[in-house]
Image 1 (spheres, one colour):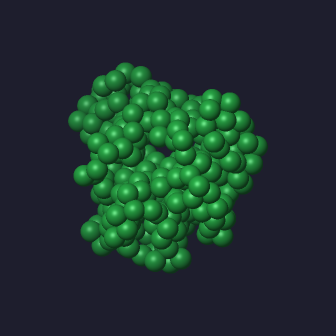
Image 2: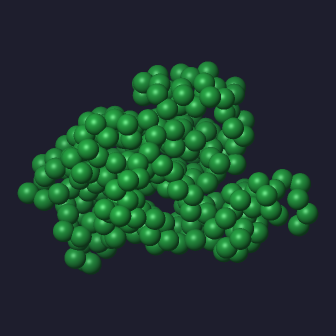
Length: 278
């Protein structure tokens, strides 16, 4: 038996974190596309890790439970890395809410039922949620604590109240962060911790989709005018995950860490502020 890492979303950020934290563990990676999971498992296994690929649909509770069950065959669930999701250029509003918002809530809930004592989890949201105007205290409470099967029925998540795919994505990521706070309380009852990382522009295949999509110029402008003056790398996100998932982060739970090169700061107080001079 080995300690088990569950890893959702076979992409660059998830792999960077799994490589940093997964040595000696059984790693079960799930992705909507089995070929993605198989390819990344092959890369990891050839580098000395022990990775099993699975097909997993984040929008399906049954699929999430199957991922957990596969992990439990190998040992106690010690870590969760949730890097799954779809971007505003990849999916319609309904799919973004079903996968990014609902699916993440279900994953955190289901893993929270079985996470081992001393276990840790990290989920990946986005700086995007920070650019949306503040929600009301009641809306934040509803995002954090509404039973998962009732989330998508919330009034302010209905199609007539969602402007476009970017708005849906921002709402989903805001929900992820509130959900991490609420679930950190539940995970704490099992002696486990849960945190969130909100990356900015990180160079991954998903980001390249965005660069080449309808908002490509917006994203290129964003990293050009953020204090860092460049996009980030998956390994820079993994640096933060390593802190949060190691003993050095033992007093950190229910938190979100912005890793965006200062883009959010620039959006509110610098050259990225709407209406600011170029």
